[in-house]
Image (tube, rainbow, N blue to C red; front, side, top):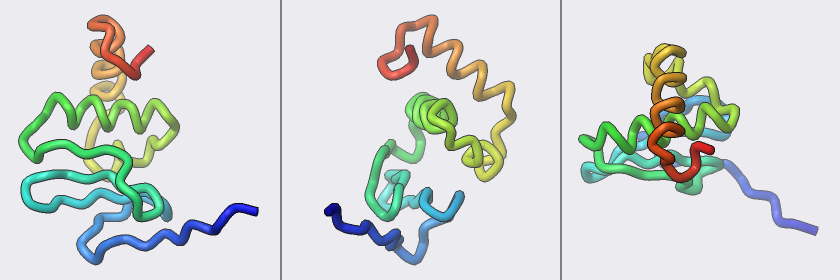
Length: 91
């Protein structure tokens, strides 16, 4: 039987939903699922920000768009651009 993973997040984490949060620390943005990092990028890296948020939304974490103030059109554009440029992870 597997061990239960408790969702424990650092105090400065902005929660997107009950299991997904975003935290910035020392110039790096971390995306946390149940307290464990799943993605990260430098604070000023807009390309990786778009890639990661597009990937999260593509994987059904649509609520991040509302949290970050990203329009649905922008997300669809980023996913389409990633597909055109054959970006890994956006098949």
